[in-house]
Length: 371
Image 1 (cartoon, one colour):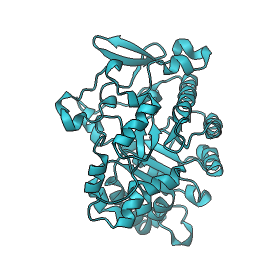
Image 2 (cartoon, rainbow, N blue to C red):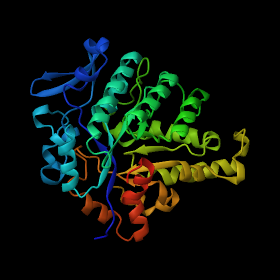
Image 3 (cartoon, rainbow, N blue to C red):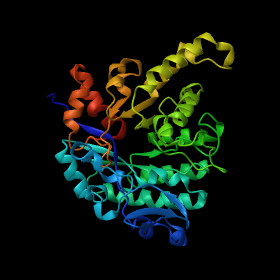
Image 4 (cartoon, helix red, strand yellow):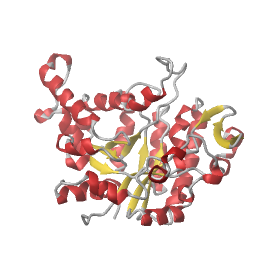
C-alpha cells in the first residue's frame, strides 16, 4: 500500500429537510423547497409543484459492497446517513475511509437548476451557500465547500461569487448547460474576470443542466439509460467551446474543472480538438499565441475530478497528470466509501509514486487551498 494522502475532490452533503425553510430569505419561504411524503418515500418540491432530486440513492454509501440489490432511487429521511447533513458525522466517516479532506458539493442542489423561476433559484442558492459555509465551519482544514451560482444574470452570479468567498467557501459551481448561450459567449466575461481576480475555481458537476423554456424534446421511448451514459454531452459542448476560444489566453489564471464525468472521454476529445485545430485552420478566426494547442490550455487551466476510471488512468498522460483529482462521491450509492483506499490503490497500481501523490490528493489540495 502506498503512503499518500487521500483527499476527495468530489464529496457531497445531503441537504436536511429543513434547510431551505430555515435559511431562505423570508419573502421566499412560501415558495421554498420542501419535502412531501409520498407513500413510504420523501420527495422534494419547490415553488409549489416543481419536482427535483431523489432521496434514496443519494444517501446509500457502502450499500454497493454489502447489498447492491437494495439500492433504490426512492428513500426517506429516516434512512439518510447522518454524515450527509451533520459535519461531525461526515468527518467521522472520512476517518473510517482514510480520507484526509474533501471538497463538498450538494446532492439535492444539483437538480435545483430545474426550478424555472430565476429569482427563486437565486434565493435557493444563497440559502444553500450560507448553510454550507456553516456546515464546513467546524472543520475548515478538512471540509472545503463549493457554492452554487445562478448565471441567468451573470451580474448577480458575480456578486454571489464574491460573497461566498467572503463567507469561507473554496470555489463555485456553474451549470453544465446554462440557460443562455455557451461559455464562449462574451456575456460570461465578467464571471471569468471575477473568478480569476478572487482566485475562485469554478466547477461543472454532472447533472446540473439549467431549466430551459419548453424543455428538451426526448428521443426514443425511454431516455433514462441513454441519458445516463451520455451525461457529459452538455459539459463537453461547453468545454470544447472554452478551449476553442481565447478565454484562457485572456485569463491565464482562471481555473475551471469538471466533476464526476470520469476521465476517459477527455483524451479522445482533446486529441480530436488538436487535430481539427491543425487540419482546418480556415474554420477559426484566431490562432492561439506561441503555437499553443487546445490540449495545452486544458492541461494548464482545467481539472478533472474522477471516481473509479481505470481506463482513464491508463490514458492519463494525454490529459496531464496535474489535472487529475480523485473523488469518493460520498455519501451516494456509487461512492467508494468505505473502501476508498483499497479502490484507489487498485486503480493507481503501477503508476509512479510521485504521480499517485498528485492524483490521490495533492492536486486537489493545491486547487482548493487544503493544507
